[in-house]
Length: 334
Image (cartoon, rainbow, N blue to C red; front, side, top):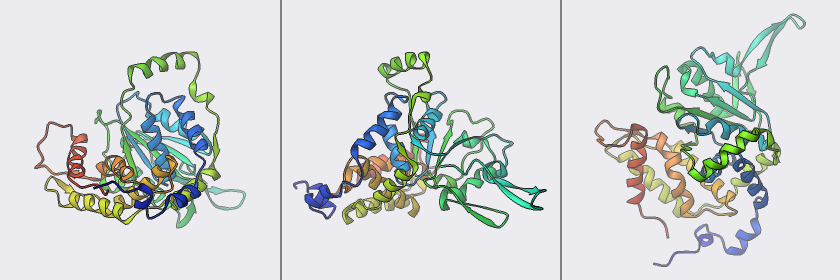
């Protein structure tokens, strides 16, 4: 069977697609190059981080220490004019240290709310699994509804808003694993991994001469990011791609080796992420590869592996292995 034109798959002709031009590709290229000047040899990770931002999602970066998890968050925040706060999560951190606290003012003779570090465009939750579940849950409302409730009052968060959380999967002493309800709030989970030898050779003198983060200049403003997020909503998605996604989602729910499959929120997250990826790559429509490329980072952390599954894979990689089998066994729309 001949492969259909991607524009036709999106229900649009080529003229309509080209006329959309939702975002300047030059602007997106400069944004990627800005981050690549610090994070070397990880172009795909950088692109997925931008996809998470433009899809109005949150990002969980899980990897060993020293591979650039925190640096990636700093680089992304410095690449556009925005408010950036870093929260170092520890066992003694309280919810009020994240959200804020009401303080009695002698001048006004009433309690006044003092916003916490959650009130920023990009919030880095460093080592999020080192704090207690009570403090972890302080992020749930912010991540899901883009607002914070304190003392029976609701405060909207600035837009755009994104939480980038990091955690170390190796060291488990003194950590509190994230519950499934909180993992489900993250659009994607990424693993940076070690850089290629050639890229690491470039990193050494780059950091020896000066601090690369200090050289990053803002490329776009916060308002432009919001405009890009709105443009993502207009990216066309064909019904066949939705049927393809739902077929895989249903298989995760029926798989004997998964005790918890992908939630409806996971399906919606993949839909938005695929739209954002298409836009980042300069298209006004999605193709099957957009969905297929994103399924592992969007779905894997949402699945819980059953105790019946016996494998030589590390526990953190078992869900990905099962998902790969499901994806490979599902026909791709042509």
